[in-house]
Amino acid sequence: MLVWLPLAITGITWMVDKGEIVGPGLWLLIAATVLGWLAVNLWGLFENRKMRLQLARILEARAISVKAEPFVGVATPRYSSLLDPHEEVGFLFVHPDRLEFVSETKTIELMKSQVLRIRFRANVHTLLGLGRWVSIEGTADGKPIRMMLEPRERPTLLGNLRRSKPLLQQLRRWLAQP
Image 1 (cartoon, rainbow, N blue to C red):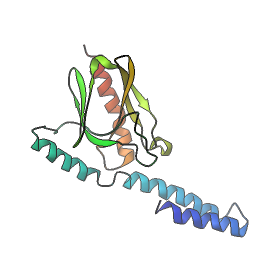
Image 2: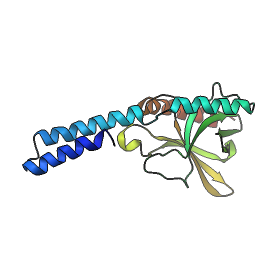
Image 3: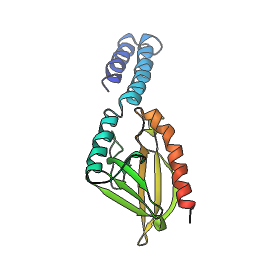
Image 4: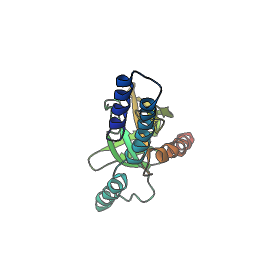
């Protein structure tokens, strides 16, 4: 917002004051949009690496090794936010019989026998073309369940969007194994 808002307001003010849609005001509005998109991509995961390293130290102190595990943001269906789609960040452990998400304060387990499908779903980052969920869906005790993950391995949103397809493929291979 700090990048987008000043240029957008200046552009709109120019357009209203001068009574012209095409001209410097429109160019300021376009520049605001492009620079705002770049800012979200570059700074949308501010201190992501630092969070990953801190959480790795915390979990390793609990004798949980996270060397090769993917670092992901997670959300359950009850969580919603317009600015940050991630309820929590942590590591995803892919065990033969279950998936386990582990963060500093939360552990979520999903048994393979409960999982029906794994697919992409949209999140707030999708609106900007910068992200999407890997959605793990199934049933538990006859009720629908869902765990949504978004990779947080790279320093930019676009870099993590590229990591979502390999994560989806890895989880689909896991699900297909007997």
